[in-house]
Image (cartoon, rainbow, N blue to C red; front, side):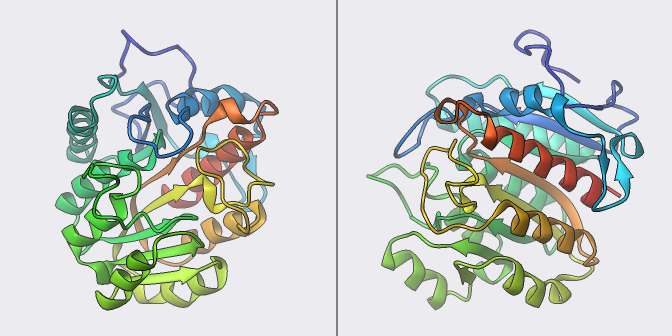
Amino acid sequence: MRFDETYSGKVFIKSHPNYEESKAVLYGMPMDWTVSYRPGSRFGPNKIREVSIGLEEYSPYLDRELDDVKFFDAGDIPLPFGNPEKSLLEIATFVRKVLADGKIPVGMGGEHLVSLPVMKAVADHHEDLAIIHFDAHTDLREHYEGEEYSHSTPIRKIAEYIGPHNVYSFGIRSGMKEEFDWAKANGMHISKFEVLKPLKEILSTLAGRPVYVTIDIDVLDPAHAPGTGTVDAGGITSRELLEAIHAIASSGVNVAGFDLVEVAPVYDHSDQTANTASKLIREMILGWVK
């Protein structure tokens, strides 16, 4: 299963050539139709693939190499430009097939709204799903300037879909007061500013449960990830995010799917952000795909 008509031919380093034999499926969601500040994240997936050639295939953190895990790169889902609702339907259709085939979906965005249909599909497939969300922003708005579907709304919508008490956000340092108030009033777990320490405190409570992990690259400080649409000062280091990924890997939770979104290469001519993202994806694949 590959989108031959639109796919550029780039693949993530050491991806497996056979879909049927693969345990996980990597795919791009090249959409930035609803961003509130700077567009360009639709170019993120292919840039991450392109720079992955510079990665070492071996992870000294996990003592595994990419040859140990069979994952298939399906390319980018062809999405109708400027049509968010139809784009979300196309993403959901693709992910439901991946899940039905017994494989783990591994997404690359694209703006953060692309995570919503994936999280809903995984929640429909796995009973008692929890969401682990790394981000600078709450993403808990009901709408953004009257638009229900926005990259400012996916966490609110998935919280309403599976119950706010099943959603855990980390690294949050930006959002409207009303968003923080809604989370508190409805039992959602928000950890302001920090990631690793509060994550470790809750992981034992999620042991054995299916978990979907969504990472907005802007959880990192702009010094570590300048190539994103809505930069926000005061973020964590790439080292802390790597440690968080490894903490999840050793926790006993069942990672049922994951994504990394909001890489916008045009704002980072050094490719620092994309290179960081590709390493994070390597560690997630090696740590979470058993």
